[in-house]
Structures are given as C-alpha cells and as structure tokens.
Length: 548
Image (spheres, rainbow, N blue to C red):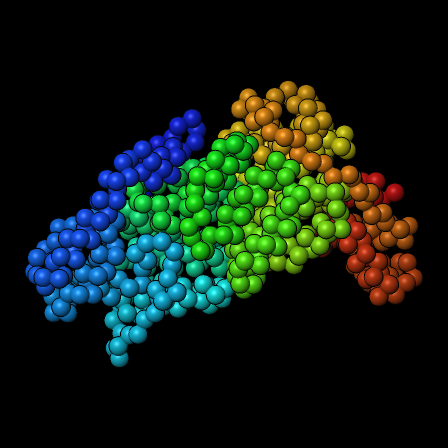
C-alpha cells in the first residue's frame, strides 16, 4: 500500500486545496522561465567545453532539479558524456539507459519508445524493451498487448535479484508509471491503482515530484470513477506542489479527478472552472476529459449536442483508440448517462444494449446503477428491484454504487407503498450520501419521491446536500414507459418457476413440450429483465401482482 506521505494540498472546506492546479499561478513567470533556462545553459556550456568531470559533478549536485525541471538538459548531458564516465556511476548508467524513453516535456513523442537492446540484455534493457512495447501498443489502441507487456515487466521485476533492482531504483518510478498507464487504459483499474501506488511510493522515496504528482492524481481519478470519493479525496491531498511552465501533462489527471468530485457534490460551477482552467495537454486523456465534461453537462441537462460532440470526438482519433479499454468504457457510460436524460427511448435502447454487450469488460458495479435508474424511468419497478438487489446482496458494491442502488430500492418500495422497507433503504442511502458527499445520487430521485422519503423517515436531507440540490437544475425526466406484461400462459409458467419446478416438471404438469416451456421461460426472463430463476424470485418479491 502506498505511503501516507502528503503534499501541501491541504483540505479546505471539505475539498482538496486546488493549489497544485495553479502550476505556479501567482509566481513571476519570468522567474520560472529563467529557472528553466538556467540549467540548460549551464549544461550546454560544460558539454561544449567537454569538461566532463565538472559536468558529472554538476549533475550529481543538481540531480533533483535536473530530473524535475530540466529533463531535456539531463538527456543531452547523459548522451554527450563519455561512456566510461557514466558507466562508472550506477545512477548515471541507469539514467542513461532510460533517458530516451521518458518525455522531456509536453506530449509524448512517436519515437520516444524506440529501443534497440544489445545481444545480452540486462534488467534495465529488458524493462525498457517491455515498456516500449507496452507504450507503443497502447498508443495505437492495442490495449490487450499493452497490458500484457506491462504485466510481463512487473513479473520480471518481481523475479529479479534485489541487487539488480537496487541498481535501477532511480528510474523505476518512470517505468512503473508507464506500466500503470497501460493497465489503466486497458481497463484494468484495480491493478492500475496498485501499480500507481507503487510508482508513487518510489517517486516519493527518490524525490521524483513529477511522477508523484501524476501517480497521485491518476489514482484519485480512478477512485472517483469507481465510486470511492473518500479515497479519491485522500489521494488528491497527497499531490505534491510541482511548478512547471504549463506545457507538462502532469497535473491533468488530478484536475479531472477534482472536477468529478465537484460534480458529485453538485458544485457544477467549480467543476466547470477546474476543467476550463486545465489545458488539454495529453494525447492519452481525451476520453477521460470528455467523461468529466459530460458528467457536468448531464446533470445540467445540456445533452442536446451530446451525440454530435461524441461523433466528432471519435472522428478526431483513430477508431482503435475508442474500440476497447478504458476509453471505450468511459465513452459508453457517458452515452448511457446522456440517454437517461433524453426523451428518445429508441436511442436509449441502442445505447444500453451496446453497454450490456460489454458488461464483462466493465469495472464491477458500473453497469447496474445505470440499468436500475433506466428501469425506474420506464416505471419497470420489478426490473429495478432485481437489478439493484444483486450487488447489494453480494456485498461487493463500492460506496457510490451502494448509494445509487439503495436509492433505487427506496423508490421501488415507496411506489409499492412498502413504507418500512422504503425508509430503511433511504436511511442507508442518506448516510452514504452524507459521509461521501455524493449529492448527485439524490439528484437522480424525483423530487416528490424524495420529499415523501424525508417525511416517512423523519430524517431530512443533510443541509449541504439540500443546498446543492437547490442550486442545481432539476434533472430532466423521461416520460414513463409502460412495462411489458406477461401473457396468461406466461403467468402460469411463472408460478411454476417460483415454486422451484424444473422445465420437465412444468411441461408434464401443463401437458406441453419442454421446448414450448423453454420458449415461454425465455420470454418471461426477457420481460422481467432477469437472467436466471433467482432473478425471477426477486422480481416476484418486488411485484407480487405478477402472479395474478
């Protein structure tokens, strides 16, 4: 687990201080530029005079500054230095091998990960080769290949002798960050978080502030989309202060995480401000940025241009980059959120069918809240009950997912006039919402349902949530769609199913073929939006009238 080392991003008013987003805002820009150019001019002068011993001493003395703010100069120095000199210094040797695999500044260069190892590979050669394969694959949308290479690099590192690992410690944060990015873009978020945590630990240990900033910010983003806002805020508070000239990609993920957290709190103005103040400087975060922006617009109800914007965004990037992995997941979730707000059921059917087809690639708990709220919008209470009950009964839901599903169940029970159950689910939801500041969950509940839940429970909405709801535009409601009805024959089969009878037993009792019973059972599953007998039982528990 990562160390609890914190930067200066202290908490203010329940939200991480966005001081780290300023990138030196308030500092004299001429001072920043002169600081950046100073290292370059000194190094260039020593290289031109071929004063190699002085250059080595300068690098040793200013190692931290060079790796943080003057990486172009460091790369130039290491490449110009005679091989005998850098080979005699373990730190120089490790840095020299990896120097051309890390970006000095700005967006990633296409040639950045080219590597031609010698006949015999050392540990760093092997890791650099696997890193180049992983990064190269993900840049063209081959995310499975990128993940495989990253996992192989992690395996090699785990199996390496301690002495070999120790010799390359200074560059491990850079390497680990690249593996973590591949895991993340491959959609392996839980593994990516662990990889980012290791990168953060080693970056802190080796005083590599840049890597620590990017790792902590990305962990915060991943926790935010996984429905774990407390952990996201904790990691934002760990982001160290790091000043650069604004061309670096390092702060973007922290900004996107902060925008998502502000959206959860229904502070849409703050979320919009963060996004507006954060330049889009990375070539690999476009889908994540769109997801954050569309989350704000979805709550605002500004979905008129969503389809056009999404089409343009996909057209601007190679198709492979949005066909799989995290990009595909986030774009489809954003489309589902937008579909929930429209009055176009046919479009929603297509979006949710596409999302369901990729259910196996989604992070745990992502799909169920969307499907459950859609069932509520369609007034299909039995389907909503079935969908929401599964993850809660398994105990696997994150706080964000649990709050959403308990809100769904509260609405289902309320509309069935099952007051005690409705109150129990509302109270549990209310606690999570208050503890995690997930005010957007309550924003999904129709105002009349929310008012009645407050009255029945005697527990008003937390004041902060009430203020946020009052300042947010009401969520657009789709006209309810009548749920599918079972035929008389299907009701008879349903009664058999809830009594636990097999298909053969039902066929014998009704004097029908097993194929006929199979067809009717399949129709029942489809209409109730379930996939097995347990789902049928839950649907009947939610709507006993199905048996009549």
